[in-house]
Amino acid sequence: MALGCAGVAYAHVETKLFTLREVTVPVLPPGADDLRVLHLSDLHLTPGQARKIAWLRSLADLRPDLVVDTGDNMAHVDALDPLLGALEPLLEQAPGAFVMGSNDYYAPTAKNPARYLLPDARRGLPADPASLPADELASALRSHGWRDLTNRRDQVVVGGLEIDLVGVDDPHLDRDEFPSPRGAGADAGGDPGAATLGSTPLRLGVAHAPYRRVLDRMVADGNDLILAGHTHGGQLRVPFYGALVTNCDLDRRRASGLHGWPGPRPVEAGGEGSTWMHVSAGAGTSPYAPVRFACRPEATLLTLTSRPPGPARA
Image (cartoon, rainbow, N blue to C red; front, side, top):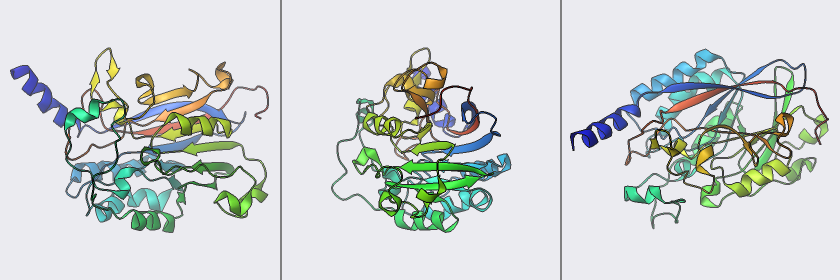
């Protein structure tokens, strides 16, 4: 009994042990300068989380070249102002891109914790979910120049490097509608002038929940790197076993971190037909399940480097 109580107490403490992960991904053209991408996800912010807000603000000290936010930012109807305060240094400093998750649209509700252990805990929304200010959040991020990738394409230039972006709305709520192919101009949902920029050296796919159907579309779309969140890394991990669930149809082995999809490694590393995928374990939890075990809350700084010389990308 005492051991169980100690485990629960530690799991609550771990939600405040914020961690920066760092990984290197060889996806840029040979000879290109490195690009630093800060991946944020699943902040699940509530008013009063001063330690989390201070940590998020401190991430601006990393001076990333690009910030990508893969959704589930809010966990309370009054979280918008604290969230924008937490992101303010990054919004003022770096270009960014974002998609929404379910907890940008709807506030979390109390549930039986055992439901989380199901392979896919999504079984519809409560009858009357409390709405969150998703439109206001998106407007605020766009006003700082961050690219809204909600079922659309866009482009951003970082340090002279053109990055071709594509994203979908939350697949966990079946809101994903993959945009039209590249080169469709205004019909692609992005900047009508984007198609005139010519071929781009980096293609980046963004989604909140890494459902297989979305990952497959992004690989077929020719993306070099896919960023997603949603899984919380399993949130409760068993040492030497790993995540218990992913809360979607992604396998547990790839609940967080850098992997290949659909194979173990991308084509440049010998896994033909695969691409790099990074799944963030996220920085928060539902306020109704404030525990993490062997899965610290995180943000990730991805250093994109040049890939080895090889055949030209299709």
